[in-house]
Length: 171
Image 1 (cartoon, helix red, strand yellow):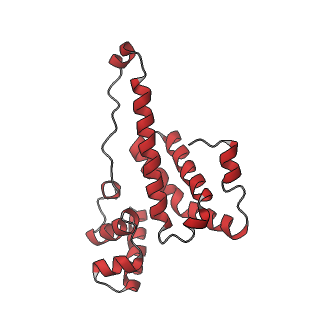
Image 2: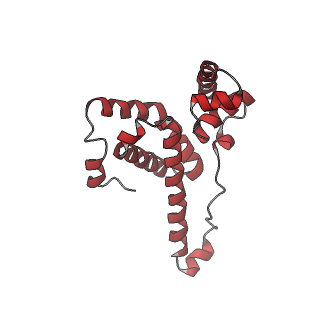
């Protein structure tokens, strides 16, 4: 998706007050992580920025739903994975449209295997930190669902997640 004027009209440029502030906080909290994931998967810093921008435009368009989502960070990550998937499809179609003589000179550009969050988290993370981050961001579980699965109190679950995020940032 490109940032056309119609996207801006529907996007966060029309948001005011609490919605604009909420989306800004969401952006400050998650944009860097989303960029890192996109850059790691695509290897192109400009396309990674474009896709993160597209994800936040989509978030602005669906803000009334997203504000009530249990895990907006997981929603953003899923939206980014969707955008990346479409980017690989576009690249493959572009490659297929090349003349055969140009294609013979190119190295194959197939879609790389989809990397999950587990494969891009720092290897130095403890298994508990890794598990908590995966449950929250990749599976999109709420604190209550995570606590039930791990057999711990909800408050402990929140503490573990905060510590896991902190450890991940430090690495």
